[in-house]
Structure formats: structure tokens, C-alpha cells
Length: 565
Image (tube, rainbow, N blue to C red; front, side, top):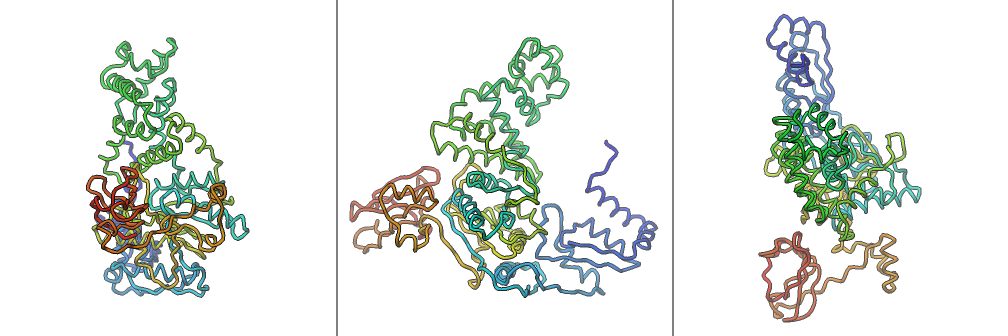
């Protein structure tokens, strides 16, 4: 209709022309006698057909690529193009470039051991003349908030000590929605940062759409928010209809939402546009009845009743699944905001968002931490890299689980992220994570289990792991005021000691110990956070993902033990 070609067409039509027009193919083959292709592992079928068509009469084709870095299958790339290159071009000469000039030996050892679990690859041993370097470090946190705050604090303290600059650091995410917690932590810790090759969480289009609904809910006279929300998702309300609505509202000193409630009186607006405006006004009236609910509940109502969530769920566009994760992460943001003070409203949340979005724009030449997805990190390098949320369902992504080829793609993605690090590499995961509006007990990524023991160290900063170095525990002390001081300094309070196991003759409840992951028939999964008392008075306190904290008589409750801490 537009008499134009998109990017896919620019590949498809030349590929078809080379296949269907022998004279054209011969002419182009003679014109381009030497063809060089970089990043060949990321080529798709059309690009393969073009390369093949241009190298028949003059087979001077040189490709450069690494099968272990093929991470764009979702965009159509086919790893078989590089894996089958020698089969497709039998006279080809293969040169293996195994020398790495970027990373330390410890980083290469860990990355090499991980990617060796893939079957779709060309085996090679990465080598370097760089020193052994700092061990690859696995950091375990209690929850996602602790993870974000911990990363921000570690970076701030290293810079304050003169060991690093902010630009030395990069934080990699599997999905964009995870940036929200990091952004909040960096602002709180006053760590300068930039979102590389992407938008800050609250600046993303889908989040702006939902925030427009919320602002209109709080302030019905906000015509800018009305104009943004009224056709998201589409309701058949076009530019001309909105002009007629404005022409009706202005002389009557009405806001657009009020005018939409009287759309039946506007003769110029008919049919689908009239029905769309009427339905939108009715929707906002209905949502207004729930505006005093907790902020996260208000956002759930907006997503469900507006049809915005359903629009993304029904979409076949892979990027819409990322957008869905972003709007559902808004629920988590509101839930965590309200948890700090239960009297907070959706209006308070919007004020907080406005403050959080008021951050100077940073560019790559400034001294700031770089935050990006692992896909965006391809081709970049940093002295220190943090990989976050290395948990089953996030890395590897939940869509890949159960499909070996998809898991291998996720493993390649982790490999790419790890090999961006030059000197220090930190792999982070949490025991519990609030994500997309739900609280989940997290399982460490299978990729962590695939790391070698040599050159890798694990530090457990979670509550059940102690959370503070033993040296501090040896000499710190004091009463409640002192403990508050330690908390203000960023040191987690001393965890209660895990009670020793007791003999089996004390009853069935003696098998439960602090830190266990269990399942209750009614409340689902939870973690035992406290065990106290003896014999028939022995009690266990459990924190459930959806039901909060509950206390049971140990001998009376029936629990399935999922993990012993």
C-alpha cells in the first residue's frame, strides 16, 4: 500500500531474484567477485541464499563467526548456516581463532565449561595470555530487592574506595522488565547509570500507556493522559473524532473524559468511534470505584478491565511478550512501594514514579554504570560485569524449558554475557523474587551448576546464608540502637542461629529446621524462617509466597519437604 519495502523485504526480494533470474545472478556473481560476511552465526535463510547465489561462479566467500555466540534465533537467525558451512562449501578452509585477548583465565575457564554442555557447536578451547585474575563469583541474595541493592552498594563502595570508576561496570539482564529494581536501587544509592540500547523502565511505551490510565483515574481533568489512553488498546477512535470531542468540550469548559460521557449529544461522532468513547468513559467510571484500593490492585484492575493485558497475551509478536512482562512488573513496583507504608495510594505511587523518572540523561562517554539486556551486550566489553537473576525461568527463560535447542540458545546467551567481562565476573541469583506481580521461590539456574569448581567461588549473602562476613560477626555487638546503626550502614541484622537437629523420639516435628523449603496443602510453597520450642510445644513459622507468614505446631502440621535449606 505504501509502495515501500521493509527490512525483511530488502532480504527476501534479492534472494528470490537470485534464485529465479539466472542472468541477474550471473551478472551479480561476476560483479561481486569477493564476498566477506561477519557475524555469520547470526544469518538467516534469506541471507544464506544471497551469499550462496553470489559465490557459485566465483567461489570466493569468506565468513567469520562463532557458533557459541548465535543468540538471535528469535529474529530468524539459523545456527545451521555456520555449523553446516563445510558441508555446503566442501572446498572451504577453516581457521580456528582460539586466542582470547579480553578476559582472564578464570572467566574463560568458567565460560568454556558452561558452553561445553551444548551439542550444537564446533568444539574449541579458548586460550589467553592474560593472568588468572579474580575468581568468578556466584552471589546468592535473599530476594530481588536485596540483589539490586547489593549490586548498587558494591559498585558504590568500590568507586568510593578508588578501586574503580562507574564506567568500569555493566549489569546485564535477561529481560528488560528486570531493570526496574536496579533503577530504583541505583537512584537510592546515588549511583549514576544509563540504560544502553533501551529505555528506562517507566519510559517504555507500554508502561507509559498504563500510567496514563492511572493518572486519568487520579485526575479526570488530565486531557493528555486521556488522549494517550483512550485508544490503547484500539477502540476505533480516530484523530477526527477526537477533534470533534475537543470542539464539544472546549466551549463548555469540560475535560475530555466528561465530554466522552456525553458523546451521544455529539452528532459528528457516530458508529464505532462513538461506541469506543462511550465504552471508555464507562470503563473509567467503573475503575474510579476501585481507586482507593492498594496501588498494585488498582493496576491489576486497569490491566484486566482495559483489555491491555489481553491484547499482549493474544499477540504473536515475540516483543509483545517482553512488553507484557514490563506492564506486569509495574504491579511489583506498586506492591513494593505500598509495602513500605500501607496507607500509600495510587496517587502516591504516581508521584514516586514522576520522581524516579526525573533522572539526567547519561551517555556512554560519561562516568556511569551501563545496564542492558544480554542481547544488547553483544560485541561490548567491560572490566566488571554482573549477570543478574540467574534463575530457572529467567535464565534459562521459561519459554525455553523442555526444548533442548532452546536451552542451548539460552546457554549461548549466558556465554556471551560472561565473556563480555575483562577482569571480574559476578553471577547473581536470589532465593525469592517478586516479578510480574507475583512472589516466587526461585531455583538457581541450571547454568550455575554447570560451572567448574576451579576458579569459581560462591558467596551466600542471603538471610539463611548469614548475609555478613564471619569477621564482622566476631566483634560487632550492642543493643537495639547499635543494631539499627548496623542496618543503616547496610549490614544485615544477625540471623537467628539454626537450632540443632533433635532426636527422632521428640516427634515428627523434629525433622523441620530453619531454611527448609516446604509445601503446605493449603498455602503452597514456603520457607521455614523460625523453629522454636521443644516436644509437643515445638512450633515452625513459615513464610509463604502468597499467604504471608504462618505459625504451626510442628507435630500437627503436614509439610512436604522440597529442599533442606
